[in-house]
Amino acid sequence: EIVLTQSPAILSLSPGERATLSCRASQSVSSYLVWYQQKPGQAPRLLIYDVSNRATGIPARFSGSGSGTDFTLTISSLEPEDFAVYYCQHRSSWPLTFGGGTKVEIK
Amino acid sequence: QVQLVESGGGVVQPGRSLRLSCAASGFTLTNYGMHWVRQAPGKGLEWVAAILYDGNNKHYADSVRGRFTISRDTSKNTLYLQMNSLRIEDTAVYYCARAGRHHGDFHWFDPWGQGTQVTVSS
Image (cartoon, rainbow over all chains, first blue to last red; front, side):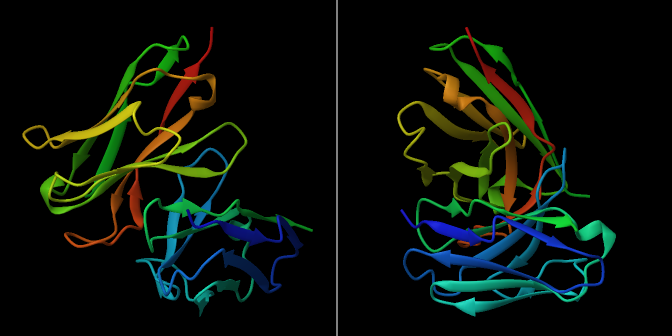
């Protein structure tokens, strides 16, 4: 099983600041890394698939990068609606797994 | 539009069974892989099971293998999760989710249903 480790667990930032979230895999997942956003009481929402492809309707301030074992989700300038929990997920092999999440909170 | 609606959750005693349903609309299950993902209270996401678009290939998390069964009824365009021998640690919101693209191995989740709560308690 591939273990995904997200850091930091909590990121305290102000609106307008840049957010950088990390996801590290215990072994290579090639480019098969996905990011989701989840707000309280809601189902997760797909943000980015296969490292850097934004899902339909996702603003350009969200971007993804990385390969192999180290990946980054960047939010270039935080909007009020971006404060949420973010999860990474790999689709490299079975079983699929998620990272533990990073909570982006208002400072 | 594409929509997933889960049902069947509830409160059940340890060792008992429950069957979750996920009614799909706006697309055909035979064209897409489908997944169940769960989230325990205050915790992160855990992938549970998948059925590939061909309906024959199924995969499970180790934590549920042998107890849970994923299936679908194409005539009803509905996905199921049969959960047997339930444990307290199975308590979670259960989401169904569609694979990102039709056919192939596009195992990202989009869209998701709203979730159904399963509580295992004596």
